[in-house]
Image (cartoon, rainbow, N blue to C red; front, side):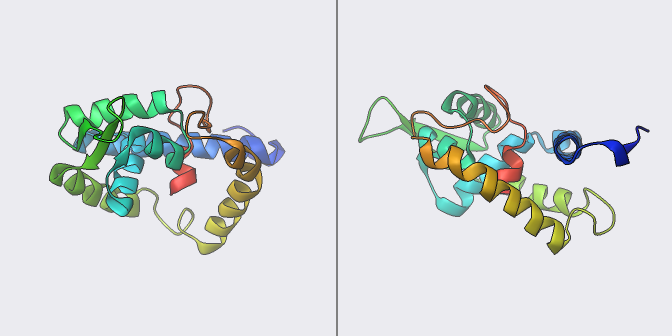
Length: 165
C-alpha cells in the first residue's frame, strides 16, 4: 500500500472517486447498468422526461457521452427515447418501469457499497459538496446546453457521480 499520508489532497480525492466508481460498477453489472446509467436514471426519475441535451447538462457531461449512456440504457429497456415534437432533431428521454426497478436495486447496492460510516458520514458529504460547489461553479455557470462540461474529461463518465450523488 502506498504511503497515503504523503499524497496531496487532490490525488486522494481523485483516487477515492475512481475506486468508488469501480466498486459501484462491479456491483451494478449484475443488474445490467453502469454508475453513469444510475445517475441518468436518477435524474429522469426525479425530474421527468427531458431531452438528451438537458439531461447531459444536468449531469454535467458532454451530450455525446450522455448519448452513449442512453444507448446502453435503451438497449436494456431502462429508458425510452422518442423524437421531440418541438424539435425533430432531438429526442425526449424518459425512464421506463424496468429503469425504475434498476434504480431501486441500485439504492440497495449503494447502502452496502462500503461497510461502516466512512462514505455516508454527513461530514464527508458536506466537505464534498463544498469542493463541488467551489470548483464547479465557474465551470458550470459558463457552460451552455450545447457545451456541457465533462467533469472527468472528454467522453468520460467518471466522477459525474460525485456531481449528482
